[in-house]
Image (cartoon, rainbow, N blue to C red):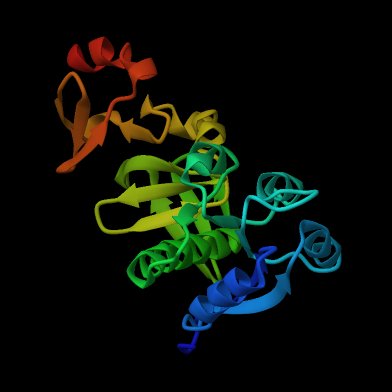
Amino acid sequence: MKSGQHEYKCFIVDDSQIDRLTTASFVRKYSFLKIAGLFESASQALAAASKAEPDVLMLDIDMPEIDGLDLRAQLEKVPACIFITAYPEYAVQGFEANALDFLVKPIREDRFDLSMNRLQYFLDIHYKAEMLDHSLNEDSLFIKDGHEHVKIQFYDIVYLEALKDYTGIVTKEKKYCVLSPLGNLLKEKAFQSFIRIHRSYAVQKKFIHKVTPKAVMVNNVLLPIGRSYKEVLDHLLIR
């Protein structure tokens, strides 16, 4: 494991011993993951999670008694879940269960590697977000990032990006994160100069360079306009 790299605990749950061990052999190639449990049933995994929840679930779906979808529902607070199944028709249900990824057996090494890259990126952001805090005053935002405190002037913020339970604060130079949903930030008086153009984006008016029927250009970055936010177009075009 690289110095400073966080290690995440993983549960592997599959009623097939061969498939369970195959998944484990793939996981052991990635130093950011530690296998905290190999289980042949959902009930075993639930018992272990009641003592110490993992960071990652790798679940088969078609299992007796409690299937993988139900197990995910009962362990919904676990940050990341990857379904590994022989039945691709479960894909829609898998993603509706808040899965980060959905892999079809037999596992291909290149596809698993892609999934692990996505997983590490997600977990690192999630872990960092838990260490974040912020406070507001009239003209600036103070962000606690680990042991550092960063002061950001509101007039330097180009746009905001929703990232599940936290929000990306994007300036011309850098991207920061605060542990607060985008909708909550936009309720603050300090963010009244921002216009929400998509469920994932809000832009500051002064940085808007161009508006098209489907996108807004801010600081040379093209951001989409969501269908339910089309009414903002008229407002932007007459500004």
